[in-house]
Picture 1 (cartoon, rainbow, N blue to C red):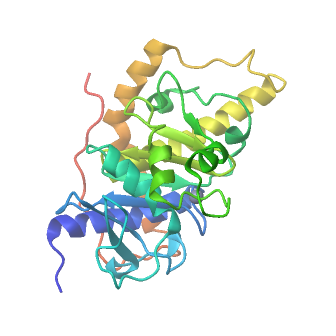
Picture 2 (picture 1 turned 90 degrees about the vertical axis):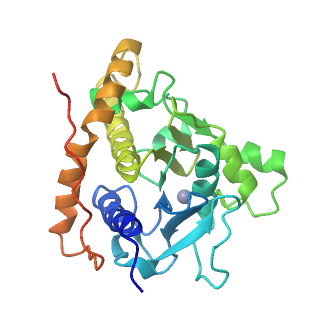
Length: 274
Ligand SMILES: [Zn+2]
């Protein structure tokens, strides 16, 4: 069966985005990225539980379509999916302009979910983090409030928990840290969601190094100012095409990553025109 061109382009991007997130250490066997269905906004597409890891997805049959309204599978006979898919469904349901969600257990970011260090932007590529920085979601409190019937395995595996997580996000605050778990971000497209995920991780790495240099504290650590954050967020949006072209090439030449659907069409070259 032939795949409509618009859908095929998104599937090709989604396969490569899975590979890119792995290449950058944002996902291992766990973690995921979704995309809203380009031909039906009420659905989203995400990898199935098998083939087992983002690095191993390679063709359209490795993915499942779900309804945005409740994260139930479009095909009732669909294979096993990720229990954490409610993260994606509820963010796509809350933000009509969002078309891709990334969820990561980055070992660089998790330490920042444990204490009280605010993850605000410390370099120009992370202006998108916004003035308030990343928000923090504490699932323990939410379990009690929602009287969840699941064992407390710290996974977002119900619609109510997904809604609670999504409530910590906004267009001005597109990254949420998940206490003792990882983080989630979203974007208007796959490229923006991947960009925000990679540079959230890099921001945390730089922040940790700056704090170490400062003797473990934040006293000698500078965050971006409000004006810098605003200007850098605009720059980030205009230059993400450049990063994505490099990241795409890195996974194309690495033999671990297979793609049987063909490569995504080249996007427009954007950049800062001055
Ligand atoms: Zn997770």
